Image (tube, rainbow, N blue to C red):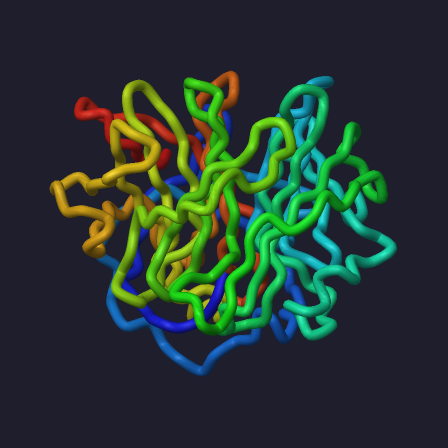
Length: 344
């Protein structure tokens, strides 16, 4: 996640959770002191609602967060990592009730200091489970800077304090044209590991990883989406059917109820692209099909996670309540006759 730009918002219908429709007015929110990393800006939305979107499904408990990433645990339930001091962890047995589970690095992460200036906030983690280990990729940076790094940690349990620091995966400097934050791991059908990442600058990048170590393999950095320096970040590549879907967030995060974050998608038959939106516009040329944006009391939904579950594919994200509280959003994904995803 970074800062700047603005964009259209949307309007409401009803919300769905695990097959149950509830009236839109049933959404409950609570207050949260927003940290300096997520300071509010005195701006107003640029556009009136233009689309109809479902409300998030009901979630309870520890639902205040930014940048959620989720994995299904082999023994059942879910483990969520999110932006926080030393990377926050939450658990859930049912995707409805969530509880805090400490932090990944309760003793601190001093190796990140050259990129954070000493700030304890670590950003935008990506969590997955493979071959008996949890893999946690996460970002270290300061707001608005591309002096950034993505690190890897692993754990056999995923519990607080059990994460081993594996090292630096990739970094960016102020002389680079990309920003090494917002990582996401995809393992393709051939067993090759790919990490997408990026925020602003020249856009979304893709590098190959070594499946044995989880670290970078080779020096090639591919470009897969761009807005010519504009607001694009938080990539997620998800395979469904014959297509790789590239989900990204457009526009302004971290401004409380004034946030204009929105979820966009394109697709390709190859993990390396090219990716096109529904109208055939290349994502390297600013293309992207909107599938979720702000509506009613749901402001700036974005920094999405997509994963397959037993009932449906799941879209997880954060959004802001009217009072600026950052909250967890969970919806399901369906696919239309042309194979394009929609949120319900």
